[in-house]
Length: 129
Image (tube, rainbow, N blue to C red; front, side, top):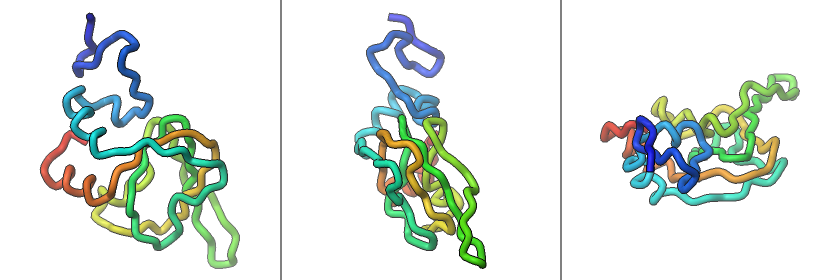
C-alpha cells in the first residue's frame, strides 16, 4: 500500500473529508477522532448564537456553515462561511469561550464535533491541530 507524506494511505480505505483533519498525521488524526462524534447538521439550524459559550467546535465534512453578525439597526450580514476546509468555533484558538457571531447551517450535511474543552487541552499541550 502506498502512503502520502503525512502517513495517510493513498488508496480509498480511509477517507477524511475535512481539510484541517486531513492535514494531520494519521496517528494524530486517529487519536483526535476518538474524542469526536459525527453529527448531521440540518439546513437553517443555528449552531451558535451570538455571545453564547462555545461548547463544541465543528469540522464540516459536507455541511457549510455561515457566520452572521447583527448590525445595530437589526439587519444581518454574513461575515464568513466555513465548509470542508475549516472549523466552526475558531474563537477557541484565540482564547475566548464565546463567539460574537451566530453560526447558521447553509448547506446540510455531516460534521465532526469535538468538545471545546478537549480542543483547548489539545492546543495547550502542543497538538499539531
